[in-house]
Length: 468
Image (cartoon, rainbow, N blue to C red; front, side, top):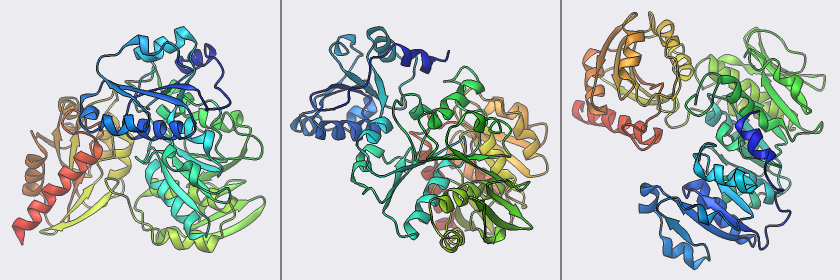
């Protein structure tokens, strides 16, 4: 029995109405704030606690008190749990935290922010999960739905809390949401009309006991679906091939390698699909703006979902031909002295870096490293062989990554982003690529992956200004 299952077994039932319900919100970042505001608007009696000093500096306690939401910062106090009907936790709260332990002992149901948003949503939800590519895929699907003429809002794990807008989307629209495994740990009734599972590779092994447990957390996205709903699975991912056997929803598959019975695939260089027995010709795969086979694989999932949702293949093809990368995700920052700079700060695991490296034909100067998450970096060696001209490593995991990469390329260390970019520029020749793709979390040197990517962008701008 997993920790999530054990926790659910000890809980009381989630109340059917929020009116008068006593809710304790744990964590007051973006998701916590969105959940607290929505819960209070629905008539719940909300109290907030957080022990994060950074969050405390950015929260106006008096403003929240004026809304009837008391916010308490400081040491964890178990007495605040007593008398609570529901505990709502932010994704960063570990199942092993004291708050979760007290909730289990008292039988208090624990819900996450996406569960709270679902309680008040009238529009169907299209949810996207996977280890890599979730954000870009989510935004791509949202853009296609919007171009198809339906009301749509996009958010979730992208940084825009679902609880801030889900209740405002009309029933004839769509909520398109990026969903993480952390968020899925605390669902109860959450049921997406469309659920896309892109891929699964080792990640967050500092939180999960095994890759199997990580997969089970992801698969919770399907547990409340029925035969009226849709699940989209990547047939090329060996860990997802058996997932369909455990799903009650209609299943569409995708593949870069072989045709599928129902779903989307690549045939003679073209994206094609078969939905409910009807074949669709979408567009040549080469016309996608997004670079690399991983982006093509994720686009197939979007194609299958969008066609099932009733959007025309012409609309789907048009967006595929114009949609570019997001910030910090294979983001092209331009050239300095003929050297191209690419910001892939969101690549916080090994497979994401491998996918980035195989997207390029020119030699790469790789900037990597940061806070390790219990991952095995061995796969970086084969992907770097013959592709990475030099690796410039930063952060706590630099020694560990160095032991892997020094067998296949030149390696050096840098103590800051400024030093890393300067060294990369020194060794890069015109026509080569400087790629920030860390394979690690950012918290040893930066606030988050956005902060790290912004630091990289600022250093590239500095070089550009100096060469002007």
